[in-house]
Length: 161
Ligand code: DHK
Image 1 (tube, rainbow, N blue to C red):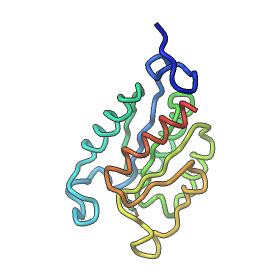
Image 2: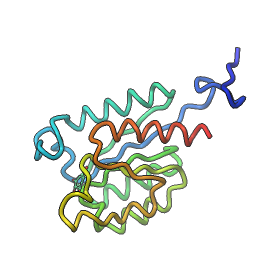
Image 3: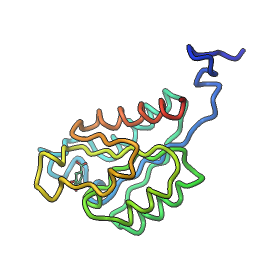
C-alpha cells in the first residue's frame, strides 16, 4: 500500500532515499577537546551520529567526512556532485577566507546548509565574514548540536518539496 501525505505526495518511506554529505573542515576533529567553553563537550562522532539519526527518521542516509586540508574539502565537495543530494557543511576557519570552497559549493546543484556551532558574528571581527554564505541555501549558527538537527530538518523539507 502506498501512503500519501497531506499534499498528495508519497509518504517519505515511499520516496527514494537521499544521501546527505556531512562535511567538516579544519580543527573540528578536535571537538570535545578544543575550547570546550566555545564548542562544548560533544565530539565529532557525536555530531555525525546525531545527523545520521535525524536523517534516518526522514528515510535519508549520511556520508560524513572531516579534513584539515582545503584541497581535500574541495575534492569532497566535488565528490558529492552526483553522489549526494544535499550538503551540510561546517568549513571551520575556511568559512572566512577560502574562495575555493565557495567555488566548489557553487558547482553543487542541491541544497547546501552552512552550519556553525558557535555564533561567529558574536566573536572576533575576522569571523564575521562568510565566503560560503552566498552560495549556501541557508546558514545556521550559534545553536550547537541543535543547529545540525535543524539543518537535516531543513534539507528533508527541501528535498520533499
Ligand atoms: C568553527 C571553527 O573552527 C571556526 O573557525 C569558525 C566554527 C566557527 C563553528 O562555530 O563551528 O569561526
